[in-house]
Image (tube, rainbow, N blue to C red; front, side):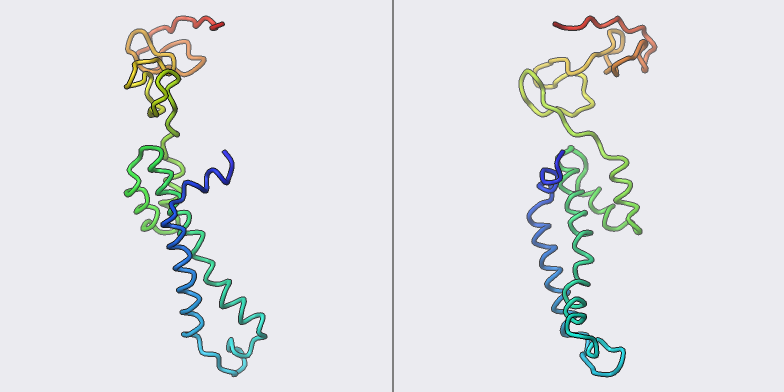
Amino acid sequence: MSLRKELRVVPNTTKIIAVVVYVGFVILIHFLIPLNREPGDIGSWPLAGQLAFNFLIPLIPMPLILLWGYIYGDAKRRGMHYVVWTLLAIFVPYLIGVILYFILRDPLPAECPKCHNVVVSKFAFCPHCGTSLRPSCPQCGRGLEPGWVNCGYCGNRVPVQQPQP
C-alpha cells in the first residue's frame, strides 16, 4: 500500500490535536523560557537558533500523536479493539505498546468475491452468502493454507486441488 493511502487512516481529529499540541508548545516555550542575555541562555543565541528552538522542538511530540492516531484508525479498520490498543500504545512506556500492536495486529479484512461484503480475513466462508473464501478441510471445515498436504487442525489428508480454468 502507498504511504498516502496509509496516512488516510489517521483520523482528522488526531491531526487537529497534533496541530493544537504543536501550537500550544510553541506558545509555552515562547512565554516560559526567559530571554535573558546572560551567556548560555537562549536569549544570547543568534536569532536563527532562537527561532529554531521555538518552532522545531515542539515538533517532537507530533509524530508520536500521529502514530497513536494511526493505531486507532488501523485497529478500527481491522475490526480489533481499537480503544484498548490505542490506550496500550499511549500508556505502555518506551513504545512497547506500539511495538506490540504492530506485531499482534490482525490482517486486513477482505472483500467477498460474490457479495462484496467485508469479511474478517481468517474466515473460510463468507458469513453473508456462504461463499468459500479459501480452501477448507472436508473433515473439520477449517481453512487450509496453500500447499498443505494434511490439515493442520485434524490431520486429515487434503484432496489435491485441480487448477480452475
